Every structure is written in structure tokens, then in C-alpha cells.
Image 1 (cartoon, rainbow over the protein chains, first blue to last red):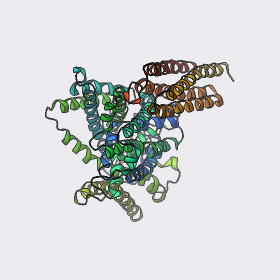
Image 2 (image 1 turned 60 degrees about the vertical axis):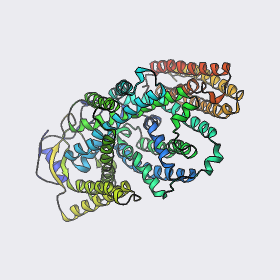
Image 3 (image 1 turned 30 degrees about the vertical axis):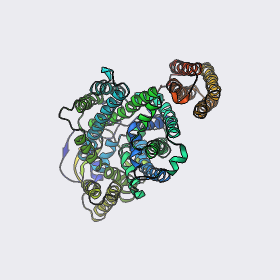
Image 4 (image 1 turned 30 degrees about the horizontal axis):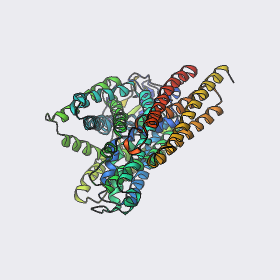
Length: 475
Length: 133
């Protein structure tokens, strides 16, 4: 690996690669689970496989609780409409990002290399997943402990801090094995989860006045529908951005993206409505508590344990891919390192030893505002800049990898677009709470990146700074 | 059609038919229960039956060993997972199941899971496809 700090254009970089004898070839899978290399054809998986993994990520109590938050703003019909519109927006974004993954068979962070530059891809990967996903891993692990103690309050092994530790270690196992384990576990969990939750919702609605009462229920503080749409998009925009981590295993180019679209447009509204409907009928009662009161203790335990697990192992998996792209250590070691850190943090939150849950979530949310602009740059680069500004029309030629591939170290238009869009996404909601900051950040970054790249290409300004040549291991 | 393909398909069909019978029993038991259980557990049983039948149809139409293996594994995962519903939901007092029906449903759930896991491992061995297909 080596790099220099002299700006140059893409054509020169490719000539440079050939000059030094580093022709692009297939890299060996040194880091495990094709973290930095293309997923080979025999390892690709079916549409149902991809759908199950995505639904496994969605199968989590936090998604139900997110739906409950909407109930203070909307009646049942408006709640469904706002969630469905938000989910369609998410579906479109993830279809575009996911298609890049399934076409290139590379992870999100490796894809970043072309649009942002190799150096920026390292940092962006850590913001998107390396740090953010580890924070969410710690949070979900702590939440797992809370659910365990809630269901079995008298068993010492189920105390929040103890359950957080064994739960965190349990969730690490599938992430350590990798994609195969994520898929198999999702197959086992998802069908049951998505039958139990609607059954429980129907029972809870029946016990709290029925469908008639639900349709007549009014929210305490009505809000404009746009706020709900933004909220829904914000809940899962990170998932939409990192869709290529999974769709790179897609057998056909449209399988993975379509699986993402279907899971978010069909199943996410059901899960969020489950939380929202019950909150409308019985304010202050969450679905898990309602299930316990209906005697569905084993179902709560099952959905709590396996649901948290099937989501959290994906957090850790994506985090490990991002860390591999930044620091060249094998993926399993990164899973172990970040998993242990996340588990310790979860236990410390439970014990109240100096780790503030609010501070952690604030950091996670702050980092989250910078993620949609990164998705925007990735989408703009692949679908607009490469074919229409740089003339790489063939889809399979737009992004190429392998030992000897040369990248810019920094693509400055991408950095400017991300910083401006990310700042707006963070700042606007503080000044104008009803304006969708995440959506504004995404759109501004998308347009700004295209304009800057167009200006660079037309005026002959160098948009890339420095060079980085991919090593035999794909780093 | 190779011998291996026929062996795998015939093994899958046997296990799938057992699952179909169990799903039909769940449907009958739910119809004999309280109105609260009738609706929800009938829908659950019908979903189970549809998945089993669609899976059988797909495996019957599969052309080679790999395709038989992949489609069989997918179907087996689906009904194995849905066995968890029959195992965990009937004890809830909300459904007002009588003791014998509740016990029967739990046993059926357990059989679905055990038979499913066994069939998955066997199909994996017979066809060589991944369980994470």
C-alpha cells in the first residue's frame, strides 16, 4: 500500500496502475466474509435469503416502539399513510444503494472508495457503521437486558447487567461466523416473529376496545403529516444506506434491492402500526407490556431474545466490515473487539457506572445525521456522475476493484457535499422542527455533489487529491 | 433425473406431508376453540398450509439437485420457524384454549421444530446446499 499527495484525474490513475504493473485482478479473501473483496458467484444467495436477513433486522422491539411514538400525533389512518409514504421513500433510496451493492458485489465502505476517495471512505465507513453501529449494538444489548429483567424480574441471571453480558456475547456468535449465520438465524426467526406480532396486536386491540375504538381514537397533539414521514425515514435511513452490505450477496442484480423494497414497504408499516395502534387505544401501554398482560410471556421472551439478536448481529457485522476497510485486521477480530466493547458499555449503562445512555444515543443520532448525505453522494456518483459526466455508461464498468486498482485519496466535491448536507440535516431541525432535516440533507448533498463534479469536469478542475493503490489483500 | 435428486425430493415430500397434516390438525383444533382463538389461529394455520403447499409445488418443479435442495431448505425453514408460534402462543390465557387442545398445539409446535431441524440437516447432506441458501 502506498499513496501520494498529488492530484490527478481518473484516466491518469488507471495509466499509473498499469505502469507500475498493478493490473486489476481478483483479490484474495484475506479478511474473511469478502469484507474488502467481491463476493464470488458461487457464494451468492437467493431473493428469499436476502428478504429474510432484511426482515431479521426489522424484527426488533425498537421498531414497534418507534411506531408508538407516532400515535401522539396522528389518528390510525393518518399514521398508516405517513408510515407508508416514509417507507416508500426509504425503499427507493435503498433500492438505489442496494443495486450498487448487488451489481458490484462489494460492501458499502468499499463502494465509498470510488465516490469519496480511499481516505474519506475509511472515515465515512466508521461514521456510518464502525462507530454508529457499535453504539446501537450497545444500546440494543442493554435493551435486551431490560426485556429479560422485565419478563423474569426475580431471576438473578436475568438482571439487566447480567443479561446484557450474556446477551451481548450470544449476539456476537452469529456475527463472528458471518453472513451464513446471519442468514440461517434470520430464516429461523423471521417467519415466527412476523406472525406472532400481528397476532399479539390483534389480541391487544380486541382487549382495548376493538377496531371501532381504534378508528375513533384521536391523537393528543396533532401534527403535520410531513413530520411523521421524516420521522419514519429517519428511523431506518442508516439501514437504507448500508443495504449493499447484504445485497452484495444477491444472486441476480435486482433480487437484493427488491427484497429491501418489499421488506420496508410491506412489513415495516405493519410493525410500526402495531406500536402506534396500541398507543392510540391505550396511551402509555406498549405492545410488550400488553402481551405480558395477555399471558403471552413466552412469545414476548421469544420475540425479545431472537428479535434483538437478529438485529444486533447485523449491527456488529456491518461495523466489522467498516473497520476492516479502515484498519486491516481480520473481520472476526473486529467482531470480537467491537462486540466486547459494546457488551461492556451495555453492562456499564445497566450498572450506572459513568456511561450515560442519553449521551450515547445523542452521539449515535448526531452521527446519524451525516449518513443520508453519504448515501446521496454514493447514489449521485454511480447513477449520474459516472455515466453522464465521466462517460462510463456500462453499469459493470462504473466501479472496478481488485489489486492494483487506483483510487483518489480524497474526492473533495464529495467531502464538501457531505459536510454541507450533514450540517443542514443536523441544524435545520433545531431551528425549524417541522422541516425534514434528513431529507433536506440528502437532497442538498445529492445536488451539490453533482454540481461540483459537473463544474470540475467542464472546467478541468482536479476533483481528486492524492492516490491510493489497492493491495493484494484488497486494502 | 438423477437418483440423488429423486431421493432428496422424496425425502422432502414425506416430511412436508407430515407438516401438512400437522397444519391441518392445528386448523381443526383452532376451529374447535373459543372465538378469540378461532380467527387468529385459523389464519396462522392457513398461512402454514399455503407455505407448505407452495413449497411442495416449487420442489416438484425443480429441475436439478441443487434447485431441489435450495427450494426444500427454504420451505423447511419457513415451517420450522412457524412451529415456534404453536409452541409459544397457545399458553396465553387470552385464547381460552382448553387444556387438551393447548397441550396438543404445543406438542405439534415441538414436532414441527424437531422434524424441521432434522429434515434441514438431512437435505443439506443429500443435496449439499447451504442451510443459509
